[in-house]
Length: 109
Length: 116
Image (cartoon, rainbow over all chains, first blue to last red; front, side, top):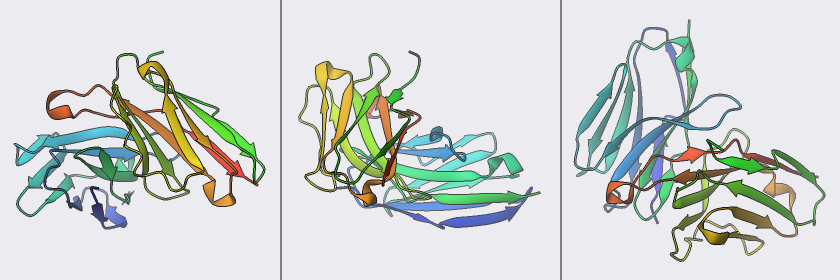
């Protein structure tokens, strides 16, 4: 089955700086790559997604890039704010949806 | 209801007992997933139901775990002879699969299982 690896496991940035989280996947048939944000004690929620026919997608301060050849995709958050502090999960969907191990992002004011 | 509903929200049980966790997906969603999240850890895939197809059980950690989905709606995850390492939050998610059989997952609040 699909195997998704995510780095780094923890990330601490200063407010206003950018944050980048990277993921790789193993199944070349995977065609959908969402990112979820999970705040402490809450359920994961979708923040952005990208499909395999697109290389980049942007939504305000959040962008995702996809390199199908290399089988990796990344989340970019610009102008980080303290409320961006959470655990972020990447995922890849082939036959089913598999998640990375998560990145705990801390934005220091 | 408007979202994915899970019950119970909290369950404390003794080692060796069986537990059942219930998930009521969003109406009309054909895809249903179960994930396990241990404290501070990631989302471990357990099982996936899609319509009337045979479920993808490849993530179930042992034969003590089983799940069913009746009538394409409500799902029950059963853990037999619980062990302490089964303690975790069990998350259910559902999706209306759109193009390319892909779509956003909507998660429930989870069922927190504690095995003493």
